[in-house]
Length: 311
Image 1 (cartoon, rainbow, N blue to C red):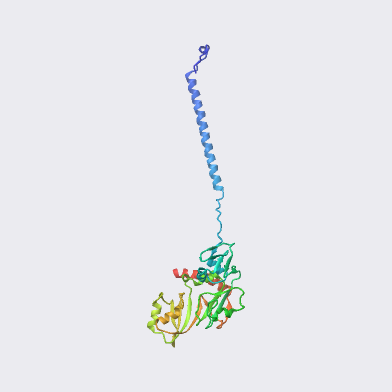
Image 2 (image 1 turned 45 degrees about the vertical axis):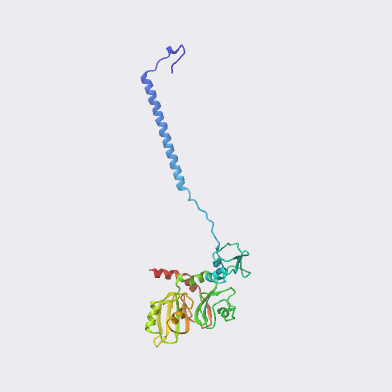
């Protein structure tokens, strides 16, 4: 800076080398400060990354939906199976909080109050599993307007819980019938996709010919689609009118209809096995409770069977 006072001519002038040295020192100081600033930022960045790594992962809080479809709720209440509940619900027999609900998939919340024919219903707590050896002249509906005998007449006083049959056996068919109030199990055993095994002994009005024997194994094109047996055998080598048949179809009266389709009259039809349950040691018209092992096998059998089938 140029001096403007009268003493400027007496001020000593700096040498050129001194000016250059001062500039070098200033530049060196500036580089040092810049380097320190960069290192500081790097250190801060490393600490920030380390803290993020140590921090616990964020927990996503999701509300659990405890509601369930109305038909499933009905099954849990022991009224009937989920499948059987569908037409009843569509008929407007159920109310949720005093509102008629005709949609089976309607979600029932934990605080909702459900009524069936004007009576409040609640899910069953005690699950009951009964194996019945069904006799003739009993039907498998819960009640009958015509006053015919039902399978529940054979179980009066057996259980305080409301129970119902799994699947159907017509009036003249005898044999293994599962009765329970476990709606989930009833749904599983009734659904066609689970391919639950059923074995019947059939007494025909005449011997089954070899040609018709092969037709049944190959499959019959009936009015409601193709149906074939999983296994077929003559139960008595000396009497070819007595047949053992295994199948998984759940179609109504399917065994009788298969033989009638081929021109045979079914004289007697007895279910000897259902989902690995047999009537062994259970007399006709009698029943027994399933043991824990049988219940466990019923609940898990389908998944293991399907896995085996895929392999």
